[in-house]
Length: 75
Image 1 (tube, rainbow, N blue to C red):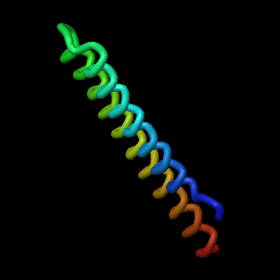
Image 2 (image 1 turned 90 degrees about the vertical axis):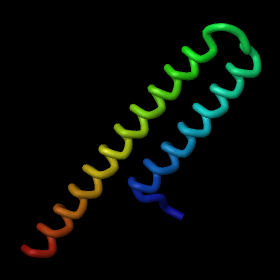
Image 3 (image 1 turned 180 degrees about the vertical axis):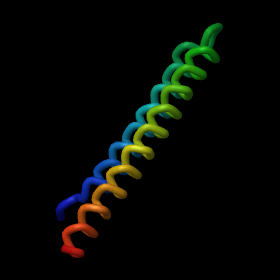
Image 4 (image 1 turned 30 degrees about the vertical axis):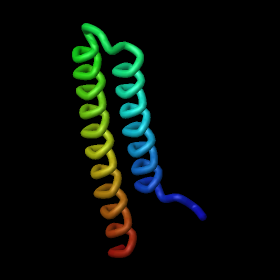
C-alpha cells in the first residue's frame, strides 16, 4: 500500500497530536504543582500552530497537485 503525500501529512498530524496529548498528561501527572498550567498552555499553543501549519501546507500541496494534473491533461 503506497501512501499519498496528503495521507502521509495526515498520519504525521495524528502522531503529533497524540505526542502532544501524552506530553500534557505526563506533565500534569508528574508535575502536579505550580507552573503546570503554563506548560500546558505553551504545549497546546505549539500544537495549534503545528496543526495550522500542517493543514495549510497540505492544502497548498493538494491545490498544486490538482493544477499540475489539470495542466497535463489540458495539453
